[in-house]
Amino acid sequence: MDNQNETKPDRDRRIIRLMWIVFGSLMLAVLLFFILIYNGIIGYMPPVE
Image: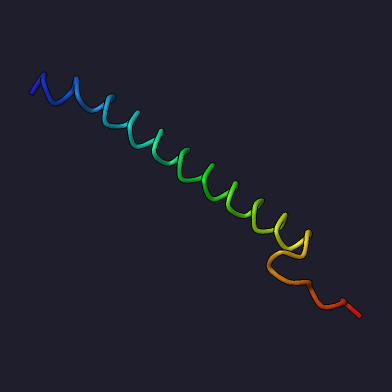
């Protein structure tokens, strides 16, 4: 049972690191998407009016 208690913090750290990587990747993808729209590469947004 001691072996399971030692590996749990390592597993938790890996899960948290993976969650941060996924979050950061999503934020970069959204930022890139808006930059591409702003520059007209994907297409222009219709006017709000």
